[in-house]
Image (cartoon, rainbow, N blue to C red):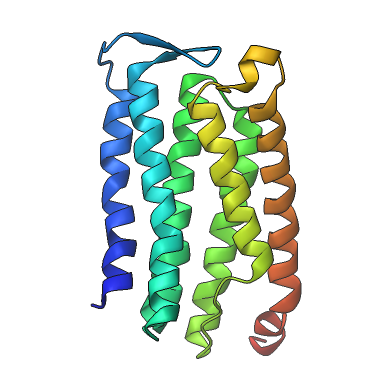
Length: 192
């Protein structure tokens, strides 16, 4: 396994740590930071999430720079993103920070695209994420980070940035899913 794929696997391995910090009722106190009252566990969980999410950029950059792009990496990288984002979204529902229907819509799209990817692989095709998919992923990461951090900074001026960011993530999630299926409909035409 090459270095970019190891970085991707490390992103997956950070998910249980994130879940433990966010869901086990540790009482580490509350911090008052930039207009928001933030449980220390949420701050630490957000830092773990942000660090894990940033490894997406690191592994991709490293793979392209040193010509280490592999089919395994093309498959694992989006899977790691989906697992991390899905875990964080479920945590946000559990904490009451996100509407369950939005999370269901986002996770449903992720399952549908993953299923299509599996059909493509069966047909000998491995499709790397396109720019719209990358924008979707980063929109999700920004929204989740803002929600985990209790709308920090924006709370001072009463601007619901985190909520708006979640809506933007939902829009890009639906749009990129539609685009992915539209571009790969040949899988269904060839499977008759």
